Amino acid sequence: MDIRQLTYFIAIAESNTISDAAKKLNIAQSALSQMLKQLETELGTILIERHKKQHHLTPSGCIMYDEALSITAQINQAKQRIQDSNVGILGSINIGVDALLSTILYSTIKNYSQTYPDIKLNIFQNDQATLQEMLEARQIDVALTHYALNEDEFISINKETVPVYLVYSDNYDEHWTMNEILRQSKDIILPLHKDEKLYKELTLWLNNSIGCKKNITSCADVKLLLQLIKTNQCVSFIPEFLLRELPKSIYIHEVTLPTLTYSYQWVYLKNRYFPKILTEFLSFN
Image (tube, rainbow, N blue to C red; front, side, top):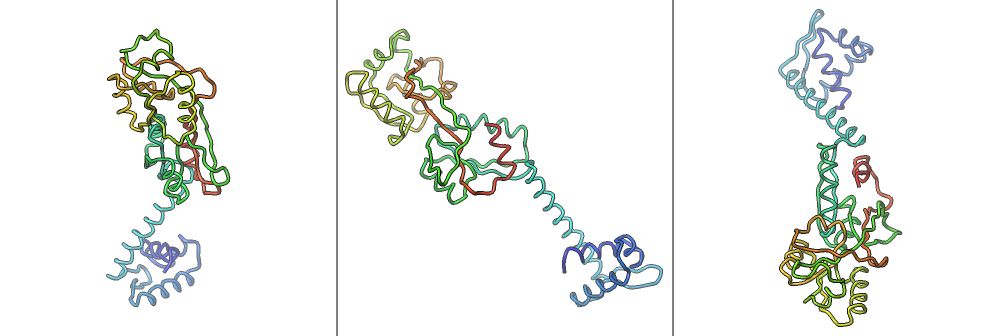
């Protein structure tokens, strides 16, 4: 039994005679009669009571008609969903993101979802190593990360580079120079992993510029870090896109050194199928 037989049987059930059904389907009556006979043989039951003027469905034929309608409707719905996915208006996208970049992802999701409300976005927040493993295993389609992954395996697009800012509480005089603030600070806590390039560059620059050793540590929880800054437990350096998260009680100084910037990009696996919904999503960034 196949979709063609189901479609032909529906036409027979909805016509007065097999001859009428054959005309609707634009096929020979003998071919349609042969198809019906083969279907009845396969099912081991009579589906149609044949009469010259009008045929009738048997009880088995009524069941067959209902099931044929249901099956063909499901197949047509599946075709439509696949076509909608192909043109970018239906489907789902699995997105990985570094914790620090969640703020950027939020605005992208908001704008995209307003335009494509039927696309389901699944978000996975993880560290760089886990995001790379998930990309390789095809558990996520793309990742927003500040790490540069192996160019032989991954493609990076939409790279952005933003300045870095010193952030500190209003306990400090906002007219102080950056070095004065850093010398007076207790600790310096960075929202970066210790293996990151910017973390290492900031640490080297701080040790050389302040003239005294400072306790430099890491905190991936941005909300906790901002609370520590607000209560004068530390100062920090954050990328520009996090400034919107700052309360009024936190002051900022832009770092103007060209080497101290923060970069991030979208990354996906090479040689993978790239549906239109994914292309449309990345165009929002």
